[in-house]
Image 1 (tube, rainbow, N blue to C red):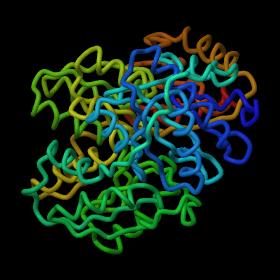
Image 2: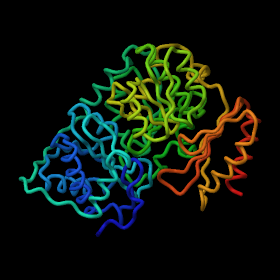
Image 3: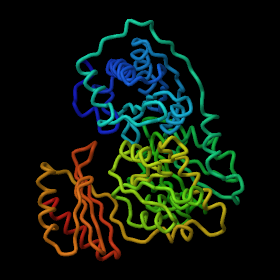
Image 4: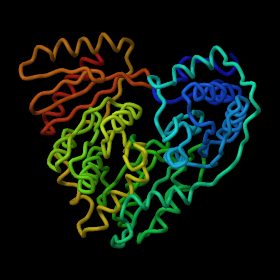
Length: 454
């Protein structure tokens, strides 16, 4: 079919590809048709909420998708410019399925679609995306019902009010905050949030620009945090916040200009949520620090380990009633937010924790920082399965070591652990290592990388 040239467009959790020859208006129209048919079969509500990010291609793609949806007899509510968590808010509050046009942290030449059922319930490969992909490829019959209607609704104010109802940030001490929006959607959503607080905001790259002229909107790459680190030190700020392109992920920089490990923020938020909802469960993904489970247990909660990926965490939260979930990639999920992820809500928790006591952020976070971590190390390989088998063969013979295959291969010992897994979106093997000492971390990391890279 025209506009569908690669089987790699449909990822594990969303749809993503190059605008010029993969994610085209024709393709978006066909996805709209297939999505409407899927929702009809799932007995979902007959109206779909659509949001779009600041990429130049997003409005045209959203137009085409909306036309596909309405051609199949369903109605559409366009909420216009939105962060992904704002689309989830709309889906949750209105109890309608949703579609967000964004390629998140990918470069400017990409775009994509994140889909959800009513109540912001995720749609991934294991929960409907395969059926939608099949319909896009094979074609789905157009409904003989009347064409659906399209309307528009601005939900920014409602989104802000909901966030501020979930975190008590009105009584914080004065704070100076640097926010790096990366020319992404945080430049649109953070202003109406932080103007309500007792804070001074220094803005970095708030202009909405889907060509990303300053740096990639991908804060998991430390090089994209350099501007924020410099600005925090220059302005003597209390905290720095960085968001990705669609603002569903948040990263922190402390007052010393040091990058905060996402697992540290997971531990902080987990402790806060458990103080509000005692004895609750908290989800953490398997590449998070060991400290997360320790902190959850110390605060009277139950720590539940998950595979990497938002669709897995959201389902596990729904199944267990967990109050909170954190991923080492900077995604944070909240039961009070329909189990969806929100970078802005995570940022508000960090600001609230900092603003309700007098110590600087680096000291506040020390009790949540217990181990040395490698960060995610990517390697391009031709045969991931054989390499994983080689790693398993070597470490399976070692005394005091346990193995599991929840997601890739995790190898654990008393003083260290590592995980190697294939990327869901790229031809890579991803390695994460953690240890009690820096020296042990380096030894384990180098040994495993030697096996991976030959």
